[in-house]
Length: 232
Ligand SMILES: Nc1ncnc2c1ncn2[C@@H]1O[C@H](COP(=O)(O)OP(=O)(O)O)[C@@H](O)[C@H]1O
Ligand SMILES: [Mg+2]
Image 1 (cartoon, helix red, strand yellow):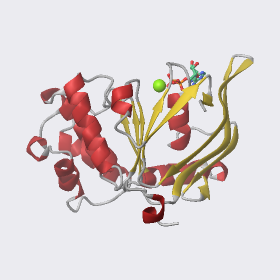
Image 2 (cartoon, protein in one colour):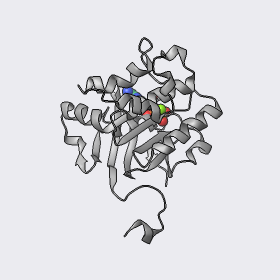
Image 3 (tube, protein in one colour):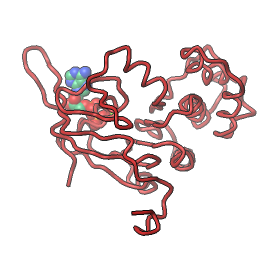
């Protein structure tokens, strides 16, 4: 069925870029095991903008870390672009993460001694790639072409988060994972960051954790976690 048949007017296409299948995640604490995610099933379409909500401790960051290949599920499978990553070696995961996923966090996580330009260039450096204008175009994408040579301490919180977004998109990854990206920002600045994420969706698949229902309402879909399960 085409988009016109379904009346689908958003800019997603119909392929699932991420499939989370029967995923459970336990952490061991001393001698006991704690189940943090229980039997999660999710399909996320390419280009979709999805919000993940849920109380503190409900497993949101754990789920992001699994999708972002920073951690492995205890059981179940995760498919990225149809490829089951649960069988991948550590080396393959690092390689795939580098190409496929950009991350942003509540506290920006920029390197204080580097300029905005140098921070954004880091993923290229790690991948052994030449700049070829990618940094300038990522900085332009987030509206910060005039702040290339500023250090993080010389930028506002909102500007620092924009630099972090530029760093997350410089590799032209297909997936952007944002864990409480507006948590350290005032309301107006937070709104601007959400507008920017929304403008990136379509080109990328954007998954955002937020506590703010008004901000989540800007996404295509809200997934709620409760006690380690997806709320029906
Ligand atoms: N590395 C870890 N080892 C043990 N327990 C953890 C670890 N990371 C998270 N947890 C526990 O898993 C639960 C979910 O954590 P998290 O995914 O960070 O939740 P959220 O992001 O929704 O606040 C919490 O109870 C937390 O204490
Ligand atoms: Mg969290």
